Image (cartoon, rainbow over all chains, first blue to last red; front, side, top):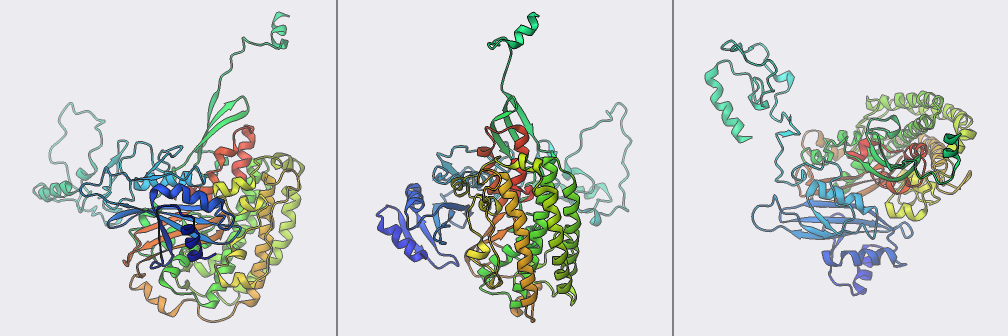
Length: 224
Length: 389
């Protein structure tokens, strides 16, 4: 069956929340309401004419006004495949703590378990009734979801500074080595903790030759 | 005498036992990279397992959203670094689908030959390292001898030994030299003899069969439920190969080859030995494909004419989305790319076959011995570079 026939078959079941077949994109897809997703997947898997045995992929995508979750189902018996999509419109205001929710299909297809965990990890989409809703690729204590468009890169992780504004070695000007302006005062401990990466002499551009040029550097730090 | 009685009586209530937690990995040769598995042990028997991945996460999908379509091709090399050609191929096909272009005929045949050569190299690693996992060190050196010849063959057109970046959207980067096809055919003749050596070394070795037969049985239901693919799927007796059933390159339709499946020769269908034997036979099928490809390859251009400008101005596919599946040595690699008309995609998702095959591990391990866990992980043939991306 091709996508049109599969869509008509889905429509004929009378399940609620099955939208139109969108053929404007390169690959056609069917928009499904989140509430009926599990029923639709169960039907597609169990019906003898559709027999979608495998959930190949689960992908969340952030668009301008919404986050879309795409499910690529395929049948090995009938050699056909279908893409389902759940749309999650964005609310107004700050989106950093916005975690939209979709029912998990890990109960229908076990393969969706890890795929859904990855989408939660990277895009912050919650999958309700998921058997093991944890991060999968990033550490448990990671803050934020990196594939969001408004994600802010962290400046350190676990006490280790991430030198995001570091100048590559081959671009550094090593000839103008800055001499320490005054000697180390007596009684200074030798094992000083490392300074912040942005305060290091070569970070964030060429090493300043004179101390009065430090003012624009501080401004840059504020931007970061 | 009293002490002896204590150990011979049946009700040894005074013996203190408890569940043992054991960490396998992340730095262990048998985990094929940096995989950590938390095992719950009852003596030698595994009662529960939880795999922990992400140690090799390099943000490939985030990088894909920040570079152009052409610039992402080398990053696909580094996902499944043992089968770079196949990764390049899947990515190029996805971008071509978005753009609506097709590679010239000679490029398609070259793609097929290179991808099959890379498949053999990848299976040789699987064969060699699996021997080491089980305790046979010699096959590894034999496997690397033949892999070296393949790397030399692939180095000539691409300039690289492992991370080729050779197959690009629109075709292949450059044509092969005039002696290349003859050298590939000569390699095929040598490899056929060497393949027989492998079987005497490892395949029919009694100790190897004892270690792998009836271990780690994957049923057909488990394959579909867990989304496994490639030799893991075929080892369970499912005759499915994207190259044959949904040919993503035209030449696959024109060459003849079989799809080897597991038969439960030495034990139950879908055990570790079946998966191993599927890989071994797939190497010979690849040799068959390469031989036919070398004979039938037509002349002509290797890069679509309109695509050559992509080296100067970035590609800008029309808004849309494409999902392409390709048969990699480890299973089905899928790329899902969403374009909004810009120079880089807004979503660049890679569905790695190792990722799905590995997700099955937690349901395979309970009930087996610890030594068999190593055999099971090895038979799934995972590459952590692709699991973590």
